[in-house]
Image 1 (cartoon, one colour):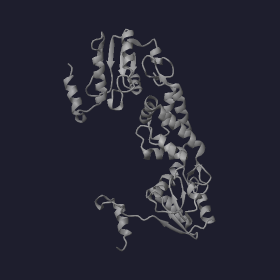
Image 2 (cartoon, rainbow over the protein chains, first blue to last red):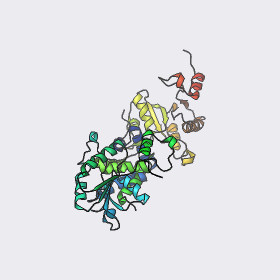
Image 3 (cartoon, rainbow over the protein chains, first blue to last red):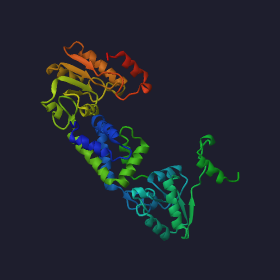
Image 4 (cartoon, chains in turn blue, green):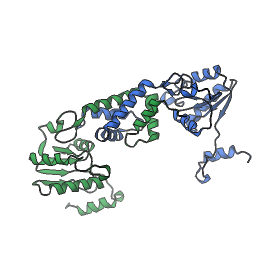
Length: 199
Length: 199
């Protein structure tokens, strides 16, 4: 016998659209929202509706934005000659929190992933090319993740910009601050030795 | 510099109301919904709205229901003389899927948990007492989970019904089907030996 009311079953089904949420977690979430936190449920519904209607992409850097240009692209305090290319808004936030970079950004909103049908078109590579050509960009910093997909994406971009008149750099690779040799993986140690510098 | 548009920040905040979802998961979910699955986001919002407006509790068994009485309580094919007391709708679903029980249910919607301010009132114990008194219930099966909280809840209910004229039973405890002695915990083995039966 089906025991869930129709709208509870639909809620459990819908929650499984969230990444990392399977049938059991969805069940726990639905129970929690309906039995213990209806106010929270209302907030989630409201926030989804608001963001769906308001959030789009910045025309220039492709990051999420509620306006045509995001605050960073609109700012006159940023250096437009340096362009940092990132995978996600979360990466951008991490760099902004570190307060070490004053250039501009371009957010790919993902990485190349043929299995998921994410190719150059989905990442807005054309818009990136156009941006580099139209604005006086001197340096492109490829700051994708050091994962397989991130590195493949960076390699692809490196190829693209090789014959353009622009310097392309990548973030330094090596031991993270606070890292202990004992716990480092071989690939990181390898990189740290290969890129060692004079003390 | 704050880098998220206001409505994205609000969405990340709201998603943290879901159980087991912290800042990082919420960020991943918000990114996924806005960048990869706007249709899924619409479905979640819709399902939340629908269930908030439609789902209430069955007047008799306290389970989620869209009508005054849930289909099980309304059915004339169930035996009203046996009442199975459970913690959650998920437990009820598991029993219904097993197709072994034809009696009625009462769903506590939780277990006693003084730290979370969940006492007898929050579990609808008064409604349960009234139900047992008004209907001709012969047997109450206490089928709470075999966790500390579930067992404390069952002990509390056992005390309540001790001087009422009703038989109170609990589910058998022992080795689960397919279980291997080698991997059983001591408490389960202890119970399996104590409740051993003639072969």
